[in-house]
Every structure is written in C-alpha cells, then in structure tokens.
Image 1 (cartoon, rainbow, N blue to C red):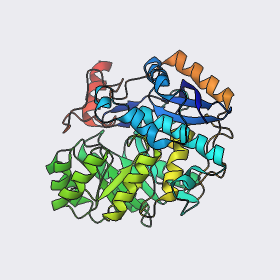
Image 2: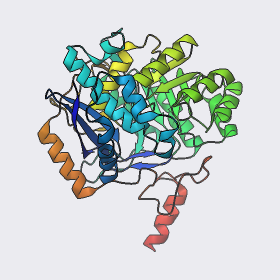
Image 3: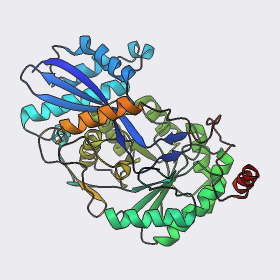
Amino acid sequence: MKISDVRATTVAVPLEAPLRHANGTHWGRFVRTIVEVETDEGLIGLGEMGGGGESAESAIRALKGYLLGHDPLQLEQLYWKICNPTASLYNNRAQLHAAIEFACIDLAGKKLGVRACDLLGGALREEIPFASYLFYRYRDSKTGLGGEEGASEMVRAARDLKRKHGFHSHKLKGGVFSPDHDLEVYLALAAAFPQDSFRLDPNAAWSVEESIRIGRAIEQVRNDYFEDPCWGLEGMRRVRQFVNIPTATNTVVVNFEQLSTCILRDAIDVILLDTTFWGGLRQAWMAGVVCQKFQRGISVHSSGELGIQLATTLHLGATLPNLSFAADAHYHHLLDDVIVGGKMKYVDGKIALPNAAGLGVELDREKVQEYAELFQREGGYAYDRDPRRPGWFAVTPEARFAQPAGSGKQKRVRARKRK
C-alpha cells in the first residue's frame, strides 16, 4: 500500500449541555477534525483530533508532502517522518501524528483483516469498563438539560447516568467552584453510592496545601485515585507524601521523558494514557508497557472524543494487562456521533470492543456533512474561557472560583440588578 491522499474535515457535534471545567467551558458542542487517509488500493483509514477549523485542516494538509507514497504499515517510519523530536520542536506535531497514525493502523488492520488491538499483541478483554464523567453544567437552552451545581443535583445526575449506562465508578470534574464545594459534592456522591468507587479531578486548580487538605478529608471514600489536584510533578509528589490516596495524572506525564522522571522521582502513582496526548495509539501502548514493568497503575484518559478516537481507546484498553481502573470518556454527554450505527452503547458500564478489521468503525457520510455544516455555521470556541464569566481566565493555583448560582453573593448581585 501507498498513501495517495489525506483529507481533513472539521465537525461540531452537539452535547446535552455545556460542560464546565477549571479552565473554561465546552460550550454545547465538541469540535473535532476527522482525518481520512486513502491508499492506492482504494482503502480509507480514519483518524480524529481535537479542535478544528482551517488551522487544523491546513496543518493536516501541510503534512501531505511527508505522507504521499508512504506505506501505512510502516508505522515506525511514520513516527520519525513526523515526530523527529528536534525538528518538531518548531511545530509540535504529536497530535497531528496521532490522528494520522490512527488512520494508518486502521488501514493496516483492514489490509491484513485483523483488529487494531491485534496489531498490538491482541486483546485481553472484549469489553472496557468506563467511569461516569460528572461535570458541573450550564443549562442548555435547546435541550433543557444541565444546570447541575450543588450536591443534590450532582447526585441526581449520577443516579440518572448509572440507571442509563450502568456505571460502577464515578469521576467528579472539580475545580470550577471552591475546593470546599467540591468536597461537599464528592462526599455526597460517595454516600449515595456506597458500593461504587470514585475519583476527583480539579484539573490542577488547587495549591499543594489545599490539595493536601481536601485529600485528607476524602481519605475515607472508596477512592480510585486523586487526579491532578495541583500542577506539576513536584507538586504532585508533595501531595503524595501527605495523602493516603493513590495520585494520578493526565497533564504532567504525557511523554516518555516525563514518565521516566516520574518513575525516578516516585512522584505519581497512576498514569492516565491518552491516545492523542501521547501522540498515537502505539505511543500510549508503549507507555503502558513501561508502566507495567515499573508497577505503575494506569487508566485510559478521555480528551473529548467522537467514535473514531473512542475506538482507539477501546483497542488500547483491550491490550493492557495493567488496566487497573475504569476508563474515562466524555462520550455519554454527546447527543450523536459521526460513525455508522450512531453512538456506541454502554452495557453495565462497559463498551464492547469493535469486531471489524482495523479500528472497527466507519463514517456515516450524512452525519459528517451535517456536523461539518454545523461547524461552519457556529464555528469553534475558546476551550479555556467561559462566556458567562467575562474577563475571567484560569490561573494555577486558582483563587477566583465561580460562585454557585444559589450562593449569597450571586443572590445579592441579582437583587441589585432588579433594583
């Protein structure tokens, strides 16, 4: 096989409601760029990357000169063509490589008649467990959904997700409101589902000292891990010294240099592997092998995927013997997908590994067209800003937390406006 064409299409797929996080908001949709790599034999491989628009599509097109004529089976050559560590310092290409590598692995599987996981050594499991992903949400004017801020609302949302999808582990995305607000919500969730496990992720919004205080306050919970409460390997190492919960990161260990430092410094317990952040499915798998040899726990991280990247996380999760925890996915917040058959289904909190060759998913061309047009109408958005908090931007550690709508400060502001 030889690559004969590379195409990129940006889509916007609606969410149930806007998702709030410590650095901003996903404003009612996920913007993703779908990558198609075609060969001289007429096969098409699929990839996906976050963000989109002309910049992402142009970046993919700019790599065609590196890719035309390349054999998709030669994945190691592909990596060095795109991700030479010195050359790519001037234009970091890791996530571009990830999308193209997804497509090449898809092509290799289709050519050889095997699944993507079989190219990595084969599947140890045919279903991948997932945690619920609980966000504070703005209410969506179109769907009427969302609006969760307080403990009772978040417990109700978790109960609904558990009923629909069967989750047995729950992840609270904190860092939007004060640490004590997150503590109240987290303890309420733990009390509501005593047989389930939990993880708290404030997106590195807290100081080391605040992280230690909250970490000690949740030690009695059935915790999976304490994810990125503060920023940095050294900050996380300090938290680990004082809190009796395994720590985890997806932010400060996303390449092999950082992984080696983490292991040598004994800084963080659990590494959350992301097929995009690590630069591809093979890179994330290799990181998982290193973690296995050094007895580090792992899970699979979510970066806001549609069905193509979700398929890569399923194949990754299927191959890793040390997958100790349920994976993350934003997926249940989506209203639709761009793959044939629509959204993949959760059964008892798990998603089945696709059985078809390659990644095992195909594009629904009508859906791609529909959501490409939606992107053209609505455009992208600033992930690291919140449209309802003008002038605000995230600082680490954060001090300017949002105020829940029912708080006294917000009530006084609304009262003054009425006057």
